[in-house]
Image 1 (cartoon, helix red, strand yellow):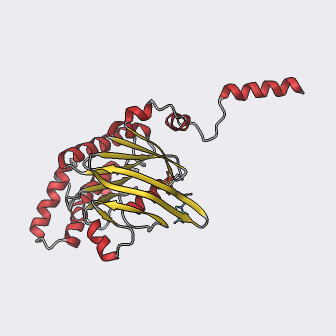
Image 2: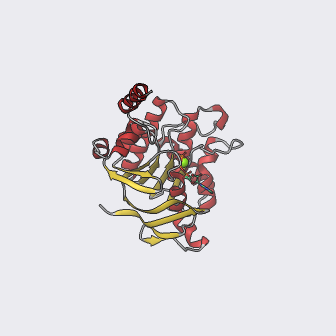
Image 3: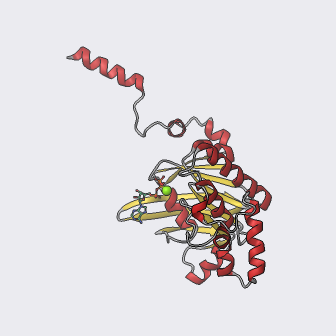
Length: 264
Ligand SMILES: Nc1ncnc2c1ncn2[C@@H]1O[C@H](COP(=O)(O)OP(=O)(O)OP(=O)(O)O)[C@@H](O)[C@H]1O
Ligand SMILES: [Mg+2]
């Protein structure tokens, strides 16, 4: 499998705390890689490094054969043109129509005529199942539809890589499943390399070709949905089952409790 992204020994400190603590990982081309881990383990921080918004203290980030660490702003903007991003809040411009929102990257980054831009926008909306919605305003559509508009905008420039930060955040399970299906469809149809950050296990298992599990700024485990689900690592199992960190098994707790009672 060819890698689209390779991260080598990434270190990022905020103050004297290493939030990313010597992280190395590989993201295969044209596949869906899901990055998981508990709150605060560094998922969003990692994503910001991958898109060049943060510079690391140590390490390298190879994207499509180029090391983006140390790149000048102009160079990094060139690389960013290969990216689509769908951030937590769909971040639509409320004063613009759905169509105008989707067209925005095309207006900013291409010299295409308005007519062509309109047509491309329409096609992208069709791809996310929103045929005929171009003249709606954001307030007239649901949260799930907004996410889809955000996705249409993310793929406007035919990106090689699309980054998703918590695509299911704030959506009900059925809408989340629909967005998951869309991520799968787009990835397969358009041969996009997808990087999805989520802490929803169900979503991850549904879409992932590869799962990378982070823990305290390090890679805890890498595998397929199946190998992760069957992992013998107690931390991995704890995460899958949604148990709090450092939780003591119930049996042990009650034993200690009983012992305590006997001793007094
Ligand atoms: N700009 C910053 N300055 C200082 N600390 C930061 C900064 N950005 C992130 N952190 C810290 O880094 C740690 C990791 O944050 P990050 O947002 O990457 O976690 P996350 O895995 O995305 O969590 P969540 O699942 O809650 O979104 C947190 O402890 C956070 O407080
Ligand atoms: Mg986050």
